[in-house]
Image 1 (cartoon, rainbow, N blue to C red):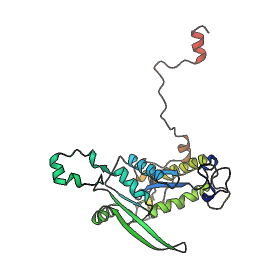
Image 2: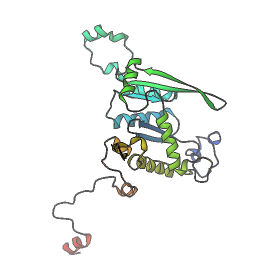
Image 3: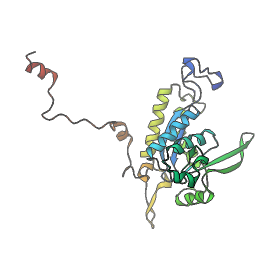
Image 4: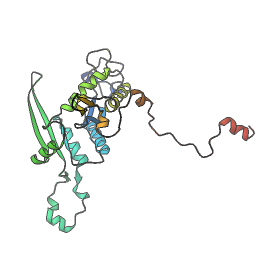
Length: 274
């Protein structure tokens, strides 16, 4: 994406010190997806920086109520490890250890940040030669191998560590959002509109799109299926939404009028003798 009035600018031609270049260059979608329901839990549009990664993981942490018994997979971007440790880790100074606990667990020898045992983090490393992937390596970063295998068996998705669901989403999203197509006139030129179009496609993806992989069979012969959206699979709603419903859905619930009703300004002036 190359927004801004000077649409031809690439990253190497942008100067962060110039105000006119602050919204130019490349912007990335930092997406966290639930592989079982295909629900987009978090989407943050920003630079490829540790600050944006922190905002994305922190938003996911808030939306999942701080759930720690989970498996997180990502690519080999090094910022993710420090972000996950910073958000899910607990400082040893915040633990109310008694003198007996310190002697039993070696309080002085414990690391400054403790990672919950229930959390598991694995990465996918893609090795390329001449812009082609020649080898894929899976690495366990946090957690134990048995724990990783148990978490993979619990889910209904792939039984290996991968990032294919996020990659598939990005491919689908490019078809739904013309602003992210490559080398066409419809690419994004303004960051504000780019963010708005991105979130419209994310909401439609969660509440309107019915992928075949989420359907459930309701009749064997002849085959009959019930189709679901990611939001339905995640039990956030019981029906498929339409774009009209999304566009007319109020952001905030309507306020209730005061008892006895509210008088118009004309009636108020008349009552006051105005």
